[in-house]
Amino acid sequence: MADATLGFWPVFFRLLGFVLATPILPTRFFNLRTKAVLSFAISLISVPDFVAVLSLQTSVSWVQIYITEFALGLLLGIFSGIVYWALVFAGDLWDIMSGFQMMTAIDPFTSVPQPVMTQFFSLMAAAVFVVGGGLDSFIALVIMSYRLIPAGSFIHLALSEPALFLTRVFSLGLAVAIPIVVLVILLEFIMGVVSKGASGFPVFVVWIPLQTAVALLLLFAMLPLMKVFTQNWTRWAVQYLTSLLSAG
Image 1 (cartoon, rainbow, N blue to C red):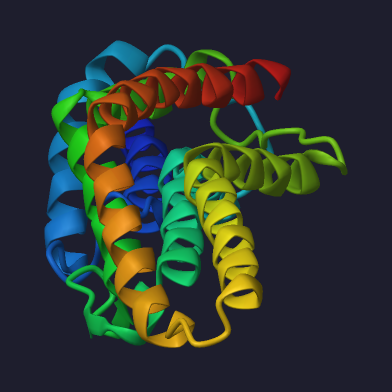
Image 2: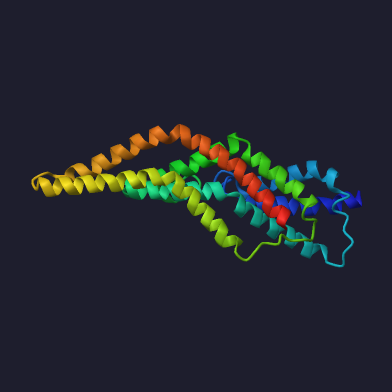
């Protein structure tokens, strides 16, 4: 029983750090108490399989181990949001290029005003992530991470990994937003040629409605592809986090 008790708390703190940091479980919908209870319940179920793994022979204090586990969970939670942050970035680009940046609404995730397309992409990312089993896979991966990174140890990241993480976020987000960027630039070129050829043409009156209509049509056309992309990227994100743990 003592070994099980000692083994429970490292699992709990690592999982709690992950649940608190992952952007897929926003605090507005899942308050701190709910996240703590969720982490406690999952840890209670999982710890019998890890008593042998968590039996430590170390002079490091348990308080230091708990702090290390919590910090590792926070780090894993941040890295687990790579697809989410990429789609939020893509939503920002869509807002800028489509003219929706002028329209804001209260974001249910953060409770602050945000452009509507940014909210749409973030909600879609969270929905596909949860429904597609991404959250389940990540929680299982965090629990199984004790086979790769024992309690009291910390993940060994290359100094370039934070920059690579941001680069991947930028690349994935740009892959979603590049159609609207190219299309709007092409429309601007066409409207510029029209305004030069017909000086009396009301370019500024036509431009904003045309820009918005084209962006909406393109969005509807891309929705099936975006669902497939998000599902594939979720599986890739699980593999990405697994590779980080294996390297650690």
